[in-house]
Length: 375
Ligand code: BMA
Image (cartoon, rainbow, N blue to C red):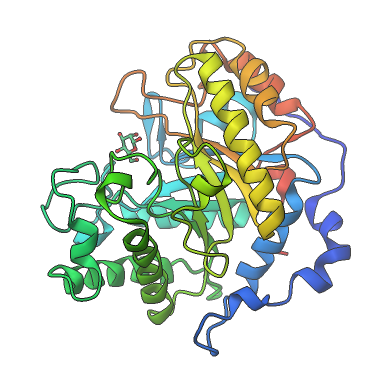
């Protein structure tokens, strides 16, 4: 089903115009310890706009949206979300796993040239791209999920045996992010969300795999290296899982307000009641911290694998999130290579009609609704 909507409200740039003079200038946060370091104006404008989005609603996001979907791969301009509702997600996320190896394709087998092209396409639509990084294990050679060794983080910090190797990986990552440029040479701002779900212990940077001090050092090492490599077009997102029970637990490994721009969490539905409870608990935490620390809040990953509930979008997701001032909620990928590993509807999928109702809700924002996050 394809239904085009015409939502009757002002465009985001119009609403933001009044506050832009103050909000769009470089903020003190953009000055890192090196006085000369300033993020690009487009990056600062993106942050200012993210802070304003929740006055209108929340953006919908989908991982790898334009790279592939159910029954297709690489078709120009195609998106399962667009096929269902007529518009692209306002946020699309991509994963840079294997960029560190110098490979030409990601861990999910998407060429990095294609990822770059889709980030540029999303920028031209005025929407946002977010980047996660399921990188390899620099000590064992295994993947992100290889938790067989509890000293991996320590080994890549200054003085560790894998420090130089990891610096090289950050160099490759930086080269890619620096290459995100329009024909006019404008660097495309992106939200970078490394070291995610660290309050669980399934990634080598997880809770039981490093100390809070090591985890924070990992973040600073990463951001400092990117800055030294000239990366000035990223905002940073901190996204634990839904394990923290209160603000203190949420902030236990927080690398600091100077570094982080967006705070969020990742959580998925298995049983509905548990999901709603987790959502509410985690949303309340990030809402309070967001207000106290002046941070953008978002649900950085969520979803219900296979979406077997015909009314999931308006019956579960919408009521769970609508009372909180989140900038966006993002669902995970529609894997073309793993049957039933999908989180957004495609034409004919059982929740597709309900997704159109969700799309037509005045609070949900898609690419044409946000129009431009960079002006
Ligand atoms: C996971 C799964 C994996 C994938 C990884 C990185 O949640 O979707 O299949 O490789 O994300 O995208």
